Image 1 (spheres, helix red, strand yellow):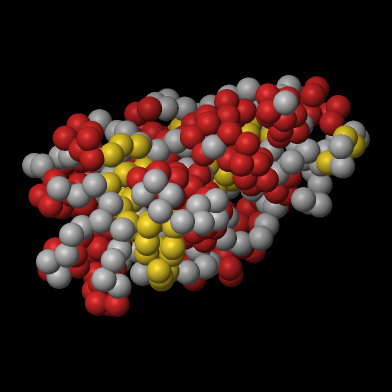
Image 2: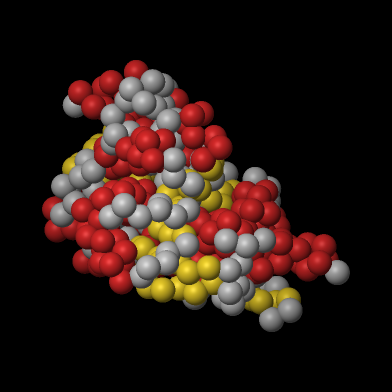
Length: 395
């Protein structure tokens, strides 16, 4: 019976009858988070043909209506795009109006694009238009306006603020496809979304905590920036998982802005308030780093916690024998973004959404991933050649 439900779920996803988000939630409920991620990746690897897509445009089955790719009725329910209309011969031009190197993760993201355009896909691109907004949404709008004058073949990235939606929509209306990596603003005018799935990341963190505590214990939860897609989806997933464990008590939750210093202050307050903290659900390495520092300075036992593969946190985990689980949100996902650009410009049927799996490991595998002689700011899940590390930190 379960196999039949899974088959039906996969069939509905392939035929644009169910949104990606609903697919992920249903799959997690049916088979668990690890198997759900594998199922999603398998679906992505087996796109329907243009003929199958066309056949679904007028079919209604089991309450789900297949939505034509040209329809703005429900962009979230379009899982595949036929890119025949974008097909052109290389070399192509690509544009990235970026957030800019505002932190080490963003810096590594930029260098992965350089590697992808000029080495991994060597010869396929003739021009790369990069603009650094410095994290300023207004500056990014100006950057995109300047880029559109050059009429690039494709754009990557995404709007940094709500006001940026209009300029990205204009690019789409000009016939420029886009591959985005964030979904904070409502729009259906983009071609493909490539990124690690934040719902799966949050669920895996919670699943590890619940199993580590054998379903019983008191925990605290810390998220990044309130309102962001990344923070809210991870939190939603964690709460969904913890709802299945009535023996787990959530003592507190707070947003700590993906800041080590803010996290340290927040955990100092929690340590003073709660004599017993059995585990920490953290949505990022930054807060896990601050948590470790706070527990050490308070001379309290460090509880098990979730994190990401940031070298500075891994060094602390080694030094203080921290029990942890890491799952990456790799800046290197942008390699898959550029790869998607290649598929689009070759006119293929492509997934509307692509989950990029992140590195996963726990305390028992720490020595396999820790880089003791490299900078604290290095995210160890990089996918470019090692010489790019020297370029990056020398820049």
